[in-house]
Image 1 (cartoon, rainbow, N blue to C red):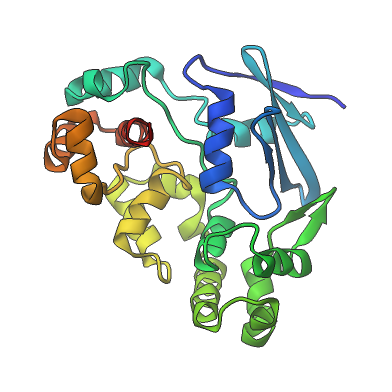
Image 2 (tube, rainbow, N blue to C red):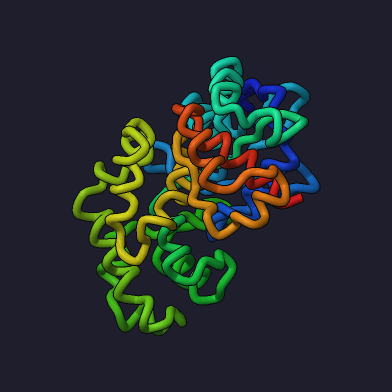
Length: 277
C-alpha cells in the first residue's frame, strides 16, 4: 500500500509518544502498540471509513494510506509543526527551562478527536470498558478491524434506555446525552481547529461549558486531548512534589510559566514528565 512520509522532528521520541497516547488519550477503537511503534486509528475520509496506520521510518513517519489530509491529521495530533526555536526561546523566558528537563522539552500527543475523547471520559474514562466498547460497536461504524466512534446524533437517537442497556451507569447517561446535545447543536463551536486557534482562556472556557467537565479538567483536556499549545494544567495538588523536584512551589512555577506563552502547554508537559520519573 502507498504511504505518505512526514518529517519527524528530533524532539519527538516515537516510542514515548505512543506510550503516552496509549495511557492518556487512546480512544475506543484505536490500536496502539508502543513496543512495535505502530498506531492504527479509524477515521472517515470523504465519508469513507478507513484505518490510518502510522509507523516510524527513520527521521520520518510513514502514514498509510497516502493522503494529504491524513498527513495533516498526524501533524496536528503529534505537533510535528512546532517551531522548535520559538518553543525553546519561550521556555528560556520562563526562567524554568534549566530546572525542568535536562534532556529538553516534550509535547504530549493529542486525542484523535475531542468528541469521542470526552464521550469516553464521561463514561468513566476507560476506553476498554465493556459498556463503551459495546456502544461504539453498535452505534458507530466499522473501519477494517477497528471501530469509528458514534456521532453525537447516534447517541441522541439511541436514548437513555439503550445506553443503560450497554452498561453505562444511569448517573452518567444524562451527562453523556448532554455532551451529545452540545456537539450536535453547535459542532463548529467545539471543532478542534477552531478551539486550538482561540486564546487559551477562551478555549478552556468553551471546553468547560461541556457537561460534567468543569474548569480544572477543561485545562487538562485543552492542553493534552485537544492539543492547544498555550494551556498550563492546574498542578496545585502536586505542590509538594513540585517543591521536592524543582525547589520551587506551584505558585512560583505558574508565575514563571506566564512568560512561556504561547507555549505553556509544552512547559506543562515537560513538568509532568519530570514529576513522573
